[in-house]
Length: 132
View 1: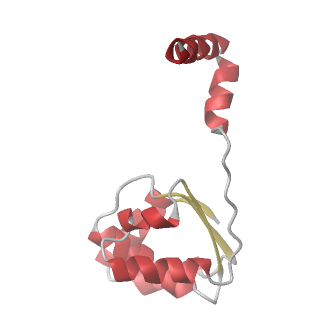
View 2 (view 1 turned 90 degrees about the vertical axis):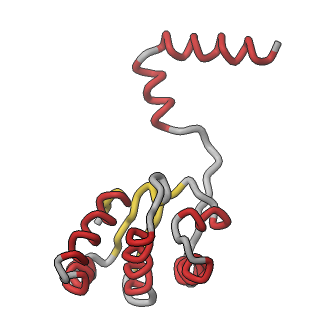
View 3 (view 1 turned 180 degrees about the vertical axis):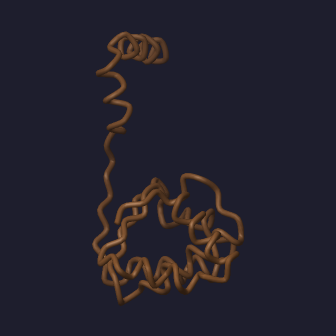
């Protein structure tokens, strides 16, 4: 299952409010591989970080979890307000994991520039002006 982080967190919060969080987590267990997209893109409050940590802890050593994020692990304190929860989440995520780090330009920016070449030329002019 592929799901944006904001949607997953909102779904888990709704389940928690309805006292159905364990049921929602069991439902997610039906997916052998859960991919959370853009983790850390939006700031997390205490409730958001709690349900996110609960999901990570529940899947740990039982089901596969994939995460896409622009945040380095050293920046995960933005996700979890509690330093102990941050360390525990990172520990669970990196144990038994393969970490792929990419230092490449955004494919979305490149696609937008291909759709509108004038923007690309404008960008090159701006970059050229900065280099002077």
